[in-house]
Image (cartoon, rainbow, N blue to C red):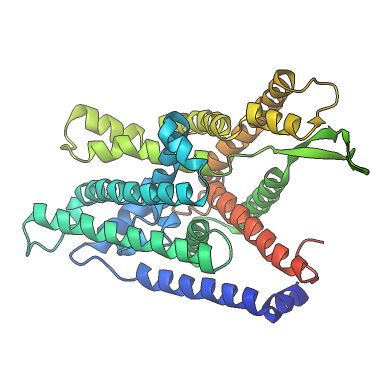
Length: 423
């Protein structure tokens, strides 16, 4: 491992990319501690400690929500805008045509995603400011004007993080947006250890509870790595072609189909959708019957929230896999290059077979994602530790991003004949 790290820093281009990424992490962490003035941080901290959805949001933002900094919303609006744009690309022929126009089309889609991010960030910023209006302690401005100022500030912070992520992707190593979420989650690990220490000091838990938590965490890490790397290899045979005096093709290869092809997107999408009822309810007085019902039943950890959360993850996993995996297009490409799947005729029979395999693979993948997402609720019940959000979803993101970044570093090392991480 140490030799691999040394080799990575021996390559000037790779060293520059790694140092640039680390520098952007520092900028991100500094911004986490730039607060929005006029907010009662103690009130927000109580909401986070009560086991609400705010704790999960605070984890993804790297503690920015607890400080109510300019980065309090993190890159959630950008992720939502990206998912919406991907869905619209499938639905709207004009956007689908742009996606097929190469770099120019992708640049336009990226620009549309940026516009969508600003709009969603402004809406979420208003909802956050209204939902936390009881935490406003600075009334030098009119309350409605202050809510507008807070919303614009949070939108500006999200826009800056979006730009920061794009810079990491272009000039650093790995996917910038994913690495920002990764850095935020990892930065909250010391705080999680502090929560455990406080429970031990108070005598609320014993060392057996901590040991159980460590065993669960290690098991989740192994399960995530196993599931992330799991794939079904579909054999593909290419026929021989004679061009002049040369013979081309004739080789056997495979088409990899991953068990968890959707990644963590269904989890994020389901969480984002489930926050909408609470966000809308925050616009109305809490004494209203339906508002109280939503706040009670859609709070993080409630039975209804857990059940709906798991079902939505399974649904979005199938939905996202269906719109990203096109068996007809893959079958046509195989046929165009003279290939076929043994036992199936080219064309529709091959497409039907690929769709059947994809549907079967998606089932265990979706159930795994749902189990990982609701795992913190059961961990809290089993260990008695509340306020600790470094659970299954966080580990899923951290391990997934780490694996993808390692593979990119591995590719740089292998191009220069250096030994990589994966042997």
